[in-house]
Amino acid sequence: MTLPSHAALTKAELLDRYAKGDRNFEQTHLHDIDMQGVALHGIDLSESILTHVNLSGADLRGADLAWADLSRANLEKSDLRGAILTRADLSRANLQGANLLKADLSLTKLDHTKFSGAVMPDGSIHE
Picture 1 (cartoon, rainbow, N blue to C red):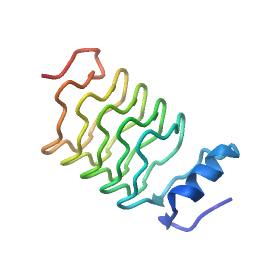
Picture 2: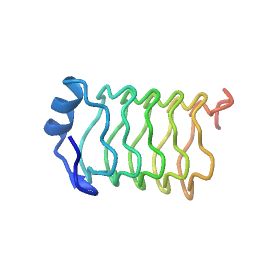
Picture 3: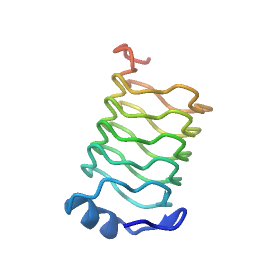
């Protein structure tokens, strides 16, 4: 199923499609939605608009979030191991206590991002 550029989805629509095996949600618009604790292992949300989304405690292992706008998103204690965050906008996002082990943060916008207690891509703990 191909969606138009930045198609708006509800949480229920995304989770229903994900449960049916769909992983391609490229260029999706999920603004200001509570996705706390969801399991979205391996999802492709590249080039998506995810501003103000609450993904705290979410399982985003291996997720493709390249070029995604995650500004002001809450990713506290989320599992982003191996996630692709290349050129994503994480400005003013909350990544406190998140696990970013082996995540790709190359060219990611990190202005005013909160990393306290996060496991960084190299395995170090951010203070």
